[in-house]
Image 1: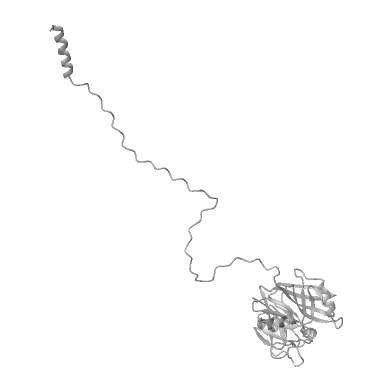
Image 2 (image 1 turned 135 degrees about the vertical axis):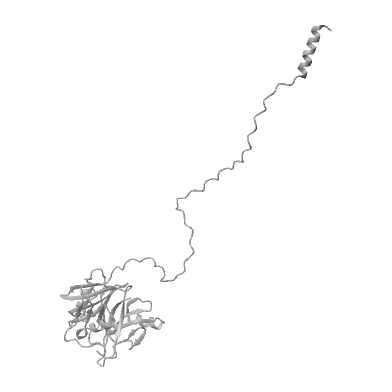
Length: 301
């Protein structure tokens, strides 16, 4: 072997025995990331405002919660004075949903009350007017009810008992023909307050035929619009026919007269308006008036 060969062999052996050149270790792997969850999809939107959670129902310890307000009465207490057939007509109109009619009776003529103003004071009434007709002995010429108790009997023979002013147990006020009233009672209907009188002056807004054109007298009467509105009234001296024609002309503001029933009049006519009413106290009574048997009064419900 030549010297050159030996040198090459030796160098190869040394190369084989020498360590491999160091290689930089790979950088460490980053720690495994936590799994990423998808963001929850947003709740659907709504045009309604959010609704608060319901609170537990409170126990009622006092007055019940107020009910939804009702519309105001279209015809509250109102005093009017108008002229019909040349005579003054004084009227108190009211809404029977807020006020009521009651009958005030007494055992004999003037035995408790000599005048309407005394009735108003004793009963706490806003207004008082004389009631129906009576016999010379002081007995009612027709029936009446007060607080469901009946007095007298139904007058079927005279026009002075052709109508009945009545308040039922429900509180509704009406003016009925006596035949209608009789049939309702026979069918089990129970009036709470009722007073028989007559004749009818207007029905369905029209004058009743056959009314007298004689004997002009002061008149007491009850008016009804066929719904919830009533009125008590007193006129100057008029015949029944002239009074009916004047009423048919609809002289009142905010009140259409559908029915008008005559009460006892002349020397019995007595109408008292208390100081609590618009316009103040009025007493429409003449010095020649005589005591009567019964009255109609207006009171707040």
